[in-house]
Image 1 (tube, rainbow, N blue to C red):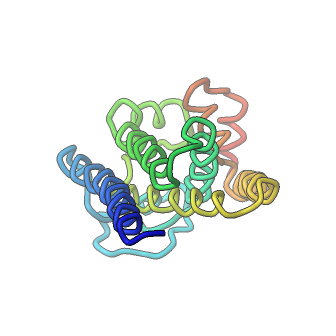
Image 2: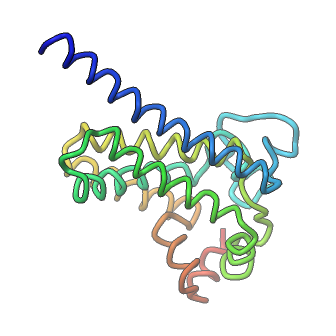
Length: 195
């Protein structure tokens, strides 16, 4: 590789990296402008919030919904691989970040917050803190990079494990979350309320 090729490659990678960071920064700024709280109203930051139906859920660095965001990364890596196969990994990451950031903004809008509160067991859900939302996006990136390196079978096995484990422990997971958001099933809502 010539020096010119190496310089071009570094500049090209830098562009994608800056674009990815810009998406995350735009997400954070937009959520701030939407009036989201920067951190938990409790005034401190925890590495893990283990309560599901608590005021700290979706307010700290990680929680029971973190595996769902890692699975988002698995799925978005697959999507990027399908539609941007010839593009650099960073371009596919940018696509994943745009989708995840878009979801985070939508999820923290009054429309979706109200939907969660009426259609699911999340009666006390008032949206994510900015910190939690940004970390959800970071965890999506973790899943994305894992999927880019790991065998497909291992990635699928981990996704299934996450779904079964969180479904068992908290009676919620990515699949149930999407189902209950789009097409609520009363029997599932009752079952989830039994925690």
